[in-house]
Length: 346
Image (cartoon, rainbow, N blue to C red; front, side, top):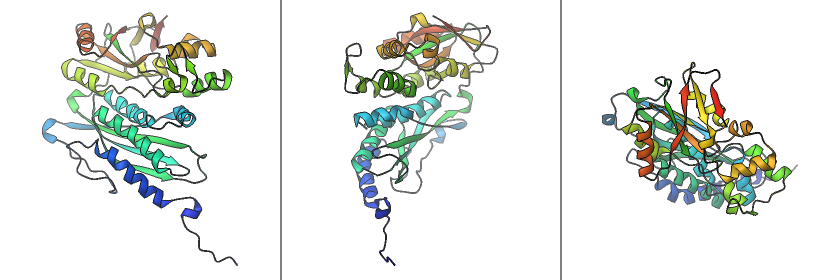
């Protein structure tokens, strides 16, 4: 009988690597701490104090998301310092749609074999995203799960909590006919549609991630790993100065799924796609995949990452205000009473 004493490490879990990962992460986590943080990394729970005097009736708004198969590009590039920013962006942009100011963020990283430097690089991206969103990274979990993930692969998910006064919740209920739709540009693909992107560009057309694409002005991998834009600063600024009736974050499902989410049932968003400045990456995907234009708009953000519904009396003041601050924006449509939740005019 074999009496050899097994260890957790021999089963595939290296607790020492876990300790080293936490040590490397701390430098990035600390950079995100705001005045509300009342706990340190390493506790069983993250503690955050709300400034009750700043709100009449504070409501917490939460959101969770991941990065999807964009992670496959990070694996192909062996570049892991931007993917965490995507994770933060997907969560904080969602809660921003209800008018919430992000307070704090938690992450979850799962992998087959924990590599401290790689885990630290992921958290560096999460930290950068939190700083851009004004959110504190107050906790997280790094799970080593041998046999569950392929070598070198991992998954990342995030959880954001924000706050809004009850009277200032944005729910789209006040949107009415003739309101104007203002679009804020995306930074590219953001974190959606990558299953189709990989099918077209890698499986069918056999592109390489390190291949320089003239129309992109960079390698394909660099373009695909461009982090999702975080809209907290410009949009929260607008929320405080103008009457924003609805906000839509253009994520999975593109225009067709996300814009109707902010609309009352009897109203339709009429989008003039001719005015949208579509980035070259979408043109490349459409051409190489021979993809119908309606399919593109129902899958990708097509260059517009966030849409706001504003009364027509204020809409052009909002555009002027944002553009003066160097935040490009433009009118992409209006609210009408027509059949269907959205009408795309190509």
